[in-house]
Amino acid sequence: MIDKICELPEGYRPSDSEAFMNDLQREYFRRKLVAWKDDLLRGDEEVMKHLQDDTQPEADVVDQATTESGLALELRTKERAVKLMAKIDAALARIENKTYGYCAETGEPIGLKRLEARPVATLSIEAQERHERQEKLSRT
Image (cartoon, rainbow, N blue to C red):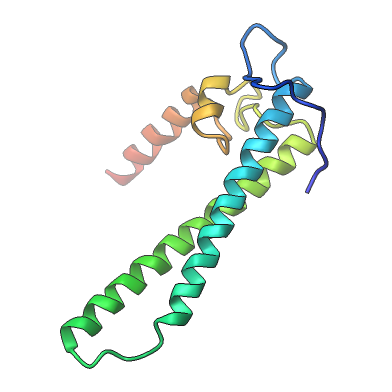
């Protein structure tokens, strides 16, 4: 994990009026990503505890099916969280090497609004839309 890049002023929010991906913006998004990952890890611990607690077989077939269905849902949620944590780690690595916030396809800035909404984004909106159109065409 990278160390703090700089101190953030209280209540700081990135703005289009400042240089894109300056130290303050990188630190802001680093903190946002670290907090998101911490939340996922706490949720992961809860899922693992629940899975360990639910080891007793149910006597009723309906209860057993309900329990198995719930466990399957929790496992899918855990799998999604693991994939998301990998994306968060990759975003943190991009922050460290100062490529965070730039489109992997075009090299252009992704944009603060998009990064606020999806901090792990690697493509600008335009590049993402192109990819989605290409996927749609390849499926037909």
